[in-house]
Image 1 (spheres, rainbow, N blue to C red):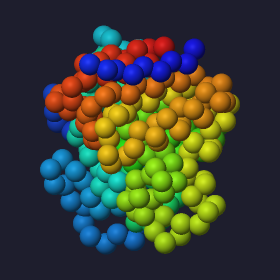
Image 2 (cartoon, helix red, strand yellow):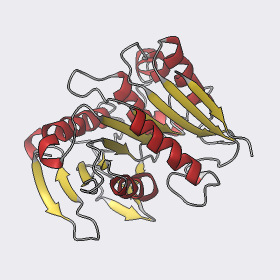
Image 3 (cartoon, rainbow, N blue to C red):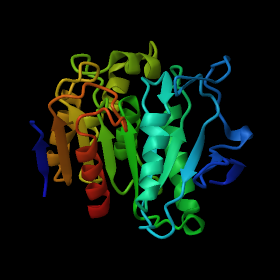
Length: 285
């Protein structure tokens, strides 16, 4: 049943990270298969945001062994296709999921720098790696979803609509996502960073993911704030309505306030409600 709620009140091991949890990193591609994105500046981390990403990887946060549900989620942080909000839209969520028996996998994808195929290639490769390593990671390969935020929500929704038989997610969770490239509703910075000057009608349509939904699109949960001035809530509405039109199970939560980019920040007024909605969606899918 479709619901709408309006709230009104890893093949190439690189290194293990020493921390409270047992997360570890894996490179996405061997060097001879890594297509360059044209960025020559070194990768830089500032205020928990990573820019100039040219070497993609995943960080795996295994589920708590005593609570392991076998479910996993690929997490795509946002940042306008220019940088990655790697903490509150990445590792914070992965750590929380792992404590709830769900393996979180944070994707550090290449910044496209107008090479529009690269982020989706990285997302697909990450899904392949999760499923190839499912047995050793204690994961059910048929219970693997994708989660994305803002431009990372666009990447996640692109994977939800442009998959193949191996890379199709089993469910989706989209936070204040960029969905459409229609100039009346989109986040133009994300469009420019992904496509550059190559903004042909064909590419605009290809990456307007509300137009790419079919009956095979995985069930999707959308969460957005009504007062979001960065990515209009119309984006979530467009994707939700496309899912409904194609008889795909969907749920939409529109919060009255929160603006943009709240992720896992506890300052978000509906933080606990958001967490409950996400856990319930993963459990039911």
